[in-house]
Image (cartoon, rainbow over all chains, first blue to last red; front, side):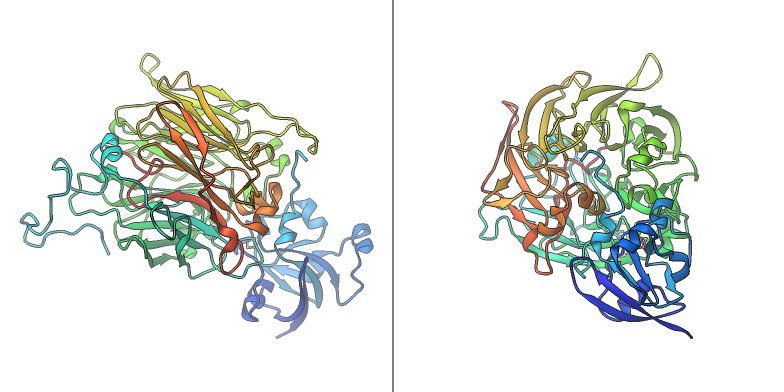
Length: 125
Length: 471
Ligand code: FES
């Protein structure tokens, strides 16, 4: 069974790299290794577990590259079910629901509760 | 594990001590709303939904037991935390296995708290026989709930024979339609209460058994509101604006009222407490209006009319006028006052609803939120506006917490997650119709051992203004 190295960068916090099996979700692997990511529904409906794909296969993870051409989530993960909590603009911007996403390559993701807060703005401010 | 004790020999239970009970009723609660006011006594403890979901704190949500006894050394402190076995629940609303509506069911006790996880769809049963040290006794796992093609449990009320009804906002995939899940008196899933598809959207509900009516409101599909509030969803019609009137015994919708543009996102819905009344109120959070509804004898139908309108306010630092967002409402036990919270503006308010068609503003308090005049209490900065409210049975003390929903908090009050919620209190003078902030009272979820937590719905151990119904 293939295993991939997934680097988790907590926004405003630490980073660590975990091994994730190809038939395991990133959330499951994070729970197995002791420091869990935020989550809620675990069915792809709530967005609590969302991460943002920064880089695939150890390619450079810098913000400029992300702005120009976001890394394609479909190259890095296979979904177990439809990611309901993400709109197409979110998918295009590299957001990925880690409760239902199993890796297909080594990659680096921004994680933590602050990524969830990026999904929607305050419309009045 | 039923709360109904059936006497084995069919004889009346001789051990049962009737000395302290009203002889007119045998079961939990009080014979009438007025009896609740007279016999209830002052609230000494509160159960409060407390949560870590959606933060980086790696801990499960919990039920806080808060000391409200002013003569206690631990007044204003969290006495106990009933920890749940899993993370990720988002505790939100909860209810008792029995309320005053079952006050004639002998042997039934108001003893078990039914505590759903809004995000996880997991349902917990907590035994609160020992009021200060409640314990978790039963867990219904999400997979059992999904089997009935339902998710996102919300409002819990008892059905007046020991069974329990929970409004469910989505199907198993977090989409529409929602529905209602019924539990039996052993806290097992009985199945769906209504024929599926009676409503698309669901949220809160309240019933008035003497009129065989239930009313339900609408938020949105879980997948719509879970990630946060997206104005695109409003434009796409993904948020609710209807209320539904049900045949309570049949479980079927008899009438739907579309509240229109002025009734967007109707959340908390309440009938008056007196079982004779068909009047009630619903708060439309997004359009920031309160609607009155009532049975119109001549038209032979329910009608609804906007009776309170909160204007948006300009703020120097915000691009657009800020809506009030009245997210919770509550009717005093004597049915005289309607209280509510404007979460974005930072206001709690009370209206005299002696004439429910013409509410008269009594008083309000500007605290927390975007515009609140009071922005700290005891040196503790307030991170958000007043949200879930609860009133003492005698109508003299109004309490509130500040968290709405973890992802919506993060969007409108990002500090709420970092500092945690508070519970505050105002003294109410029902004779004069006034509210006054009690600056001596503060419960701080920012100091919880695992890290700052949010606080949501509040219940009293022996019945309160947002859970008790009378037959
Ligand atoms: S935990 Fe809800 S979408 Fe992943």
